[in-house]
Image (cartoon, rainbow, N blue to C red; front, side, top):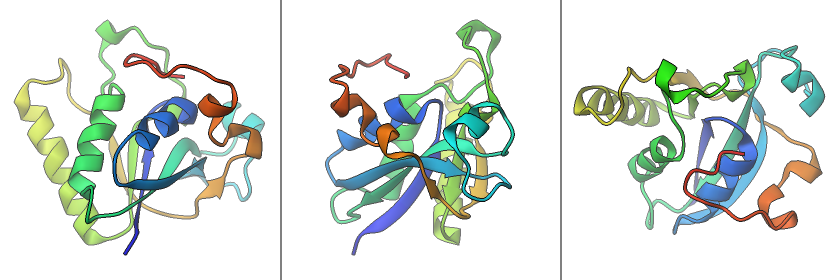
Length: 160
């Protein structure tokens, strides 16, 4: 049975491309979630008018990859802190968030965050939000699979 997970951690183009490389990920979709505007557009999300984040919906086969494995990859794919030393600009649509579909996902997400906060992996505390999943609005077609469509090479420190 295919399951679903939703993550936000910066620009959805890079995040989607990275999730696509994981064995067990069946499909991905770039989109918007977590805000208050119905049917948001990219322009409105970028102008901070919707409350939404750029997110990636990940359909995965739990027989091949676990939700915990997806979370660990998510935290490798972006910096979930607001450390001054990371010198990255911050916009609200890029905030780090996990949108859980059930209590089991919530518990696993909170366990992973708690572990990472004491592990010393990050210089600063993780600021990733854990929210209940709401409506996921697919992004415009030109955002879907952006890296492949534009032949952008995915690198380890590639953000967007």
